[in-house]
Image 1 (cartoon, rainbow, N blue to C red):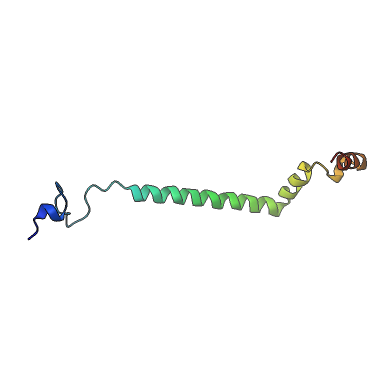
Image 2 (image 1 turned 180 degrees about the horizontal axis):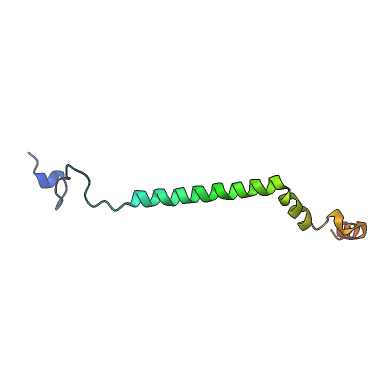
Length: 83
């Protein structure tokens, strides 16, 4: 025959029938952290989608390119020959 303190561990009492005891809410905090990361990722993707749809993203990429055609043919030739 098992004693009650052996079945539930030394020094522990039986679980309460109405709920759990010593709940710290760790799962809720982890859920909120993961949800916040997911929502921020979706917001970032929406901003990139919006910038790509407006043409702003391609304009910035063309302006950042070191060998763009807007700088003239002399600058383009100099850039190509320097590699």
